[in-house]
Image 1 (cartoon, rainbow, N blue to C red):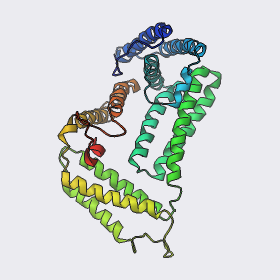
Image 2: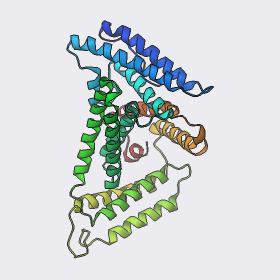
Image 3: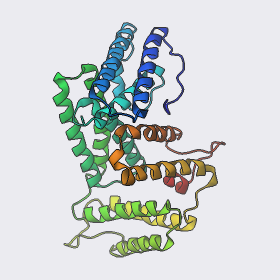
Image 4: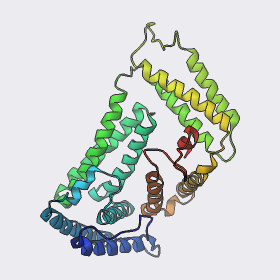
Amino acid sequence: MTDSPAVKAPLDPEEQPILDSVLYIRDRLSLLKQDRSTYIKSHDVLQLYEQVIEQVHLLNVIRKEHDKPLEQNRGRSIQRAHLPVDNVLDDCFQLISLFFLTIGRNNEAPAVYSMTSTIRRLLDHLKEASFFSAKDLESIGNTFDSMRETLQRGKETYSPHLLTLLENRLNTCQNILAELQASLANLSPELSPVHEKLISILRSIAAANTRQKFPREEVLAFQEQLKEIQGTMVNGQFLGSDGTAPSGQEIVVELLNRCLKWAEVVLSREGKIDERFKTTFDKLCDIRNALEKLSLTQAWSLRETDLYSYQRKLDRIDESRINGNFEDAYGNKADLHAQRVS
């Protein structure tokens, strides 16, 4: 029914009835997602939500008796858990969250769940790649503010188990965001436009590199823009209007060097992916193309729950990496080009 990992027997036999129940609920959610013969009814979604919360309560009772972490505290780690009950509950919450979006209840607490998962993945990748703009972070921060307002409005309506879980997930994301913002704190306003331009060029080269036909002339044009930016430097520094070197030099200079190196790598490879990682690359391209098709040609009939299978496929690919890198069958790591393209 889902792309989630196969469920193994729980370590604690007392959790087996709960596992059975949440598996049944997940199957009902999956069937509801696949049924396009009728509109999704709010009553059906709310009923399944209440059943999930009931199982969370029962699970917490068992875990509290054995002095184990409660389910809502799992929100401090958004990565998939090793415990089968937690994984299936995550599936249920993801689906319910997308169902709330589908039925137009975007500003209610359950709708926040899937958003925290997506933003956490995004933040992890921004941190790993080490290139992002202040505008990127500002936009994410604004989204967090909106999500917290949603949780505040839901305090009188929704289960404290859900609200605590969502608060923990948001706090985890907020901590990563603060870390990323701190890394740009020394960037002066005078250098911000250069930094933004470099980020834009780097992303444009990366996008060009994944096209079916490699656009060599386009990448050469981006490389020329980088050289023009490099040409404005004096003695290896960017100068401000008063002739002094603004703060944040190391941030912008390092980014410029990375952009120049990436342009060289992309031009040398001409869009050809390492065969060892081509299967993964093709899967990602298929997902991207399917999502683009959904957004451009089928937006009128799109249900947010349609995104669930793509979300899970991306999770599985992301979680197949080892210490942030793809490895082949022999444990050899992907090079820079394959890592950044995949």
